Structures are given as structure tokens and as C-alpha cells.
Length: 449
Image (cartoon, rainbow, N blue to C red; front, side):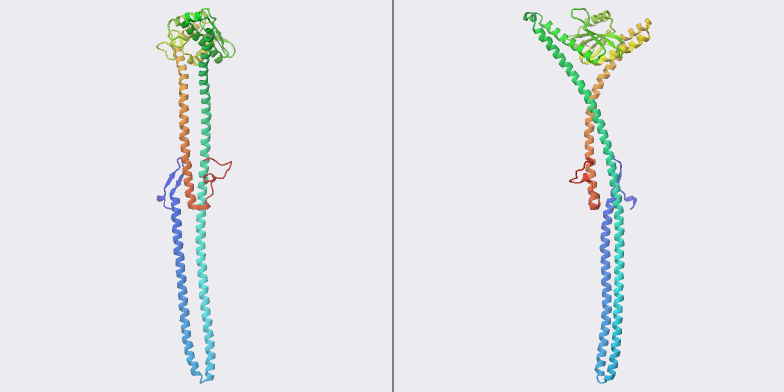
């Protein structure tokens, strides 16, 4: 086959090149072979008739000559009736010649018959050899087609295995992310629910007071209830998140913040303190900052944090304001984690720099400086960005799955078309592929295409 006639297509998945012209060439070759056989048998039949006609002409010619001779002999016999002795002698000669002629004719007929038999044998031999050659060629082509099919099935199996492994990894990752995301959502819901439950409990307890007290302090009592509910939930949140730390509420009626978190490392050693103030009002008040700074100094805390519903004008979720951290309730877990880790790290520095007052002052300046503020904000913002990125990844993975499912359907459809074309050309000699049939046999080891 001329290389210029090759026309190949490349499988978009495995990269295997498939020669389309091979299939077309086979159909043309089969058609030409059938035409050649018809013309060949027609030529043989024509030649046979020609030989028979020639033999028939020769036989008729000899027969005609014999008839003429017999006629002549009959005349001689009629004339020889008068001469009996000559007639008997001539009759004997005639019989002898006639026998010789019959023997000659019989011999000629046997020779021609032998030639015809030999010709038929040669013809059959030629046909058998051609058919055997065609069968061998078809067997080779079938073997090549089977090799191509086996290779294609092998590539398909490898591709499916890779896709299954990839899908498994994606499913595992998605399950982990979904579990993490679900846990965060549940935790947030629990926080909101606990706030509402605490608020309800406080309201219920407050409703037991006299009607006169509620009328006089309705607005003040409502704000106090909400604030107390957030205070209790803040303490519970810190206890759940940081099991090693000591969370101590400041008793009501005493001067100070709402609770103090004493931070302990994994060895139970105290590393520092964070003082927490909870505010749940409709407006922000700047005097809260000065008051908490004073409480921080009295309690010897390292960091002060205000958890508030009403944020300062320039702070959205959390921020550093005049030496005090300000945050909303939902950013507390991330901010508390980062501040706690910073105090633990600085406690290690304290131990290594024990007795060096200048180093301690530098450390204090760092904790209350802009650099520390910027780093803490960057870390907490990274936590929030990670949550946003998680949602994006979840949407991207769902999109990838939909695209992959569409690609698998295209590969399946093209594979079935190729198999159908080969089956139409080769016929029943093409090995059966169970999962490409209309009614595939059930097999536990079958591979889904």
C-alpha cells in the first residue's frame, strides 16, 4: 500500500494512531477479488467449452470419414457379391481396418479425456492455492486486527484505572473538605444556637423578676441579657477550643473584664494571659478600649481582646485599635488560635532570655507594635481566605466531574462505532467483546465503559 494513501486518526485519550485506509483497502481488495474470481471462472468455462467443441468437431470429422469409407465399402461389397471369395477377403480386411480405426478413436478420446482431467486438476489446484493464499492473508489481517483490539482494550483498561484512581482521590479530597466544611458550618450554627439558647435562658430567668422591675429597666435589662449570653458562650467556646488553658470568668460586681484565658503549653506550663471583654450593643464606644487596657494592666495580661457586635468604623471583622484587639464573635476561633500561639512562642523566648530586662521590654514593645498587629491580621485573613478558597475548590471539583463524565460518554460512543465497523467487515471471526454487545452477558469481572 502506498504511504501517500494512508489516512490516520489519533485517539484523543490514548494517542494511538488508527489507519482508516486499512479498512477501506480491505473492502476494495475483497471486491476486486470477487470480480477476479468471476472473470477467472468465466474464462475457465469458456476454455472448457472451446475444448469440447474442438473435440466434437474432430470426432464428427472422423465419423464423417468413417461413414464415407463405410459407404465406399458398401459399394465394394455390392460389387463383390458376384465375387464371394474376394468379398470375404476384402470384408476381413475391412473389419481389421475398422477395428484399427475404433482403437485409434478410443485412444484419441482417452488422450483428450486425460488432458481435460489434467486441465481440471491444474485449474482446481490454482483455485485452491489462490484461496489458501487469500485465507492466509485474511488470517494475518485478522491477527493484526485482534492485536489492535487487544492493545486498544489494554489502553482502555489503563485509562479507566487511572480515571478510577483519580476519581477516588477526588472523592476522598472532596469528602475530607466537605467534612471539614460541614464541621465548620455546624460549629457556627451551634455558636448561633448556643447564643440564642443562652439568651433565651437569661430572658427566662429575667422574666421571673417582678413586673415593676421589668418596666423600669426594660431597655437596660435587654442589653444586659444579650451581653451575658455572649459572655457565657465566649467562655464555652474558649474551653472547647483550648482544652489545656484555664478560662476564668470575672465574678459579677467586681472591676475587670469578662474572662481571663491563662494559656498553657502541652506540658501544662503557664505561658501568658489573654483578657477578654464581651460587648453586645448596637453602638461602639471608644472608652471600652481605655477601660480594657486598664484591666489588662491590673490583671498582668499579655493581650487584651474586645468581642463586640458593633464594630468600630474602620474595622470590618477584626483589627488592632490603640493596643487592644477588636473582633466580631465569628472571628474569635481564628484570632484566639493565632494570639495563643504567639504567646506560647514568646514564652519560649522569655525562658531563654530570663533576667534580661531589656529583651523583655523589647518583646512588650513588639507585642503592642504595628508589626505584630500586621502579622496577626495577615494570619487571620489567611484563615478566612482558606474558607473562601475551599468553597471555590468544591465548585471546581463538581465542574471537573461533569466534564469527565461527558468525555467518558464520547469515548464509549466512538469505541462502539469502531467495533461495529470492524464487525461488519470481518463478521463472526471478530472476537466478541461482551460489554460492547446489545445484550452483554453478566460477568462480575466486566469493566464498565
